[in-house]
Image 1: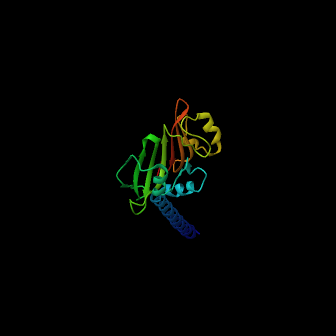
Image 2: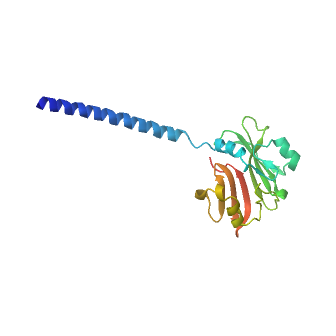
Length: 188
């Protein structure tokens, strides 16, 4: 009887160790996969382009450079086109200071084929979101109009994020009034 108990104990230990090892292996693989696969902000940005949050005034995310030039004219200044590590695309800022507009333009394969990646407006811009929020709008109105779309983890009395940092609208406030509106992906 003693032999059977010792033998059964050894078998149980062996099965237990094998089970622990396979469980640990799968945990390690999950950790590796989570570390390798970052949050895909480009995917979030693509989703945003399909919503009613994708434009300010008559400028929308994904709009072609030629269309922007027709609407706003040539930018007063542009930054050098740079490839961003975050997405591997070319990015260039187009500035329209007298209109209170800055556009980040991007292109996947070519810095000469750019589309609107993000939009930033400040004073003296008269552009507004599709819910009639613009520079000078009051905090309480923004909170009421976008009540169901606000990301509370990325918002406070100075900044309100509608959607998410990976694709949305970010309102900045001074003295409870909007002073800056950013539309696009603010995080990667």
